[in-house]
Length: 211
Image 1 (cartoon, helix red, strand yellow):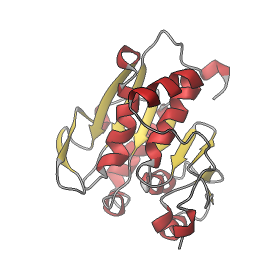
Image 2 (tube, rainbow, N blue to C red):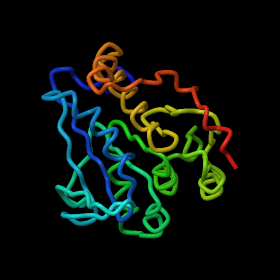
Image 3 (cartoon, rainbow, N blue to C red):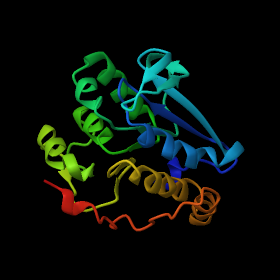
Image 4 (cartoon, rainbow, N blue to C red):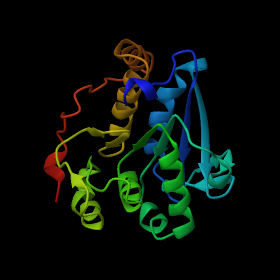
């Protein structure tokens, strides 16, 4: 992001997380924990097609604070992955709302196969992106106009951040915090979380799983 679109440090970062049936728990709540540790410097809203309980892939439900249609853009739009992406990408009303929110948000950050949903909106066409390495070819096959990077913990291209599988979302979230605030703040958050931040986006020991 250029300086004209930077978020003033005096304004809390508004994070919007999109959930859908059978979303991946850690994809969503791992990054949200990092933003949540900003305390008063962040505000989190969870959205879905409908307000209320949304079943995760592991079984427990997440709670959507609002319907996507009632939300505007966010400072950071977080898109998790999960087995439910295969159904969600065929849901035209959901995808239309996802595209609208992505276009209206300052930063868009996907985790794992969340990049499949983002790619299916067309907003990643011509851009670099990555995804879960265990289903990398499947994801890439659905969006051939995207420049898929097979070895990356996360990829930044313009306002779009895409990360690899599951836990990679936390590394990406810290990178977003470093971008919107500074690296010292990201390191502070990682320490508070007792999390070993892999701050090198090219660190990807799981790339060998790409099939």
